[in-house]
Length: 465
Image (tube, rainbow, N blue to C red):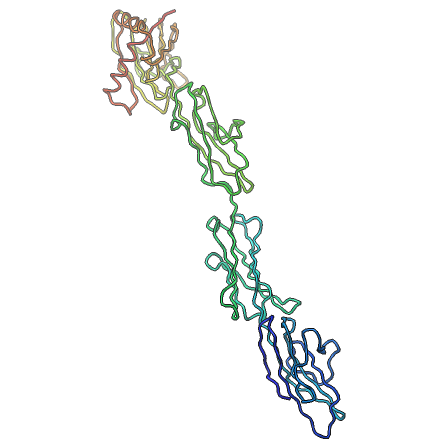
């Protein structure tokens, strides 16, 4: 028998497996047939199974004339199922013959479509699998698949289908990050029988917990007491933000729930007690993040009642005046006795707390502690009638005094005070009120402090019980 050993065709085309045979003249031809022997390496010596015999109908036909010893087999619209080894056998009245190798039919199948299987949820930091699939490939080594090579790399796996075709899968196992979000991943297949690659693309949607949480505060986070303030919380989030929570951060670091579930937080009639840190917690389906913002409240001084302190000399008493204000208050000590005297005061400032210490020896007396800043003034008057030093638990002499306190008087900033208040203080000053040395915050210049202090004190009002 004379046949070409290998024939290669493209799926969907027509093909003829050319064949001729001969036998001795003394033999008489009986019959012949073709059979497909799968993908075996050679044709069998015995008779094939019945289901392997090629029937000359539909797409299969005998192209040659058997009487002329032409045994060419024709196949129309070749399918990948037709691929394999074809063997021809004929019989005479005295023997039968078949070729050992037959004809091997290669069918090339061009992939018509490809797909990308991406999980519905790619989450930042959680391993995921993406599969690029090219179906209807035959033979398997005729196609090459490329998948997201510029973004992520994966392993190619080939599987054989029941219809004789191959499915090519590239499986990518990777850990998604924010760097992958919105990246376009392309899967393409090249084939030796196709001029252009078949490809499809998908955009990676990586979900992540809220990030870059930011809080913006009206007036740059600094307002006057009794004013209003607006907080606004924003974040980058995928998927969308599902909730907000606002908290006040207490001094010990714990969180006080403000019962606000909006991206905005509004505070009105703000008091000094509301100053400090505020936290916004942002949540989505993946997780939660928070951010903090500082609220600074500006307010006039509030003086604590003067207290005793250690004096190095037994003939003197020591008094301490403490004020809370923002900005920190300037504290002035004034004294009125039978002889006017200037008081020398020690002082220190720590945040909003101003503390001034003075030692006096003339008793009885009227002792004034006056605290001022740009937002107001407050003073307290001690009418000290008796005083003596007694040792405390450490043996240090501490003053024990008998005193009457005048009413504590608060005044607003000078521009908001009434004109008659200045006249009242001026009249009081003419009776012999003496200025003490003044303790001021370090961030101000002496000239600024002196001008501000004098301006403020001129509006003070002293009221006795």
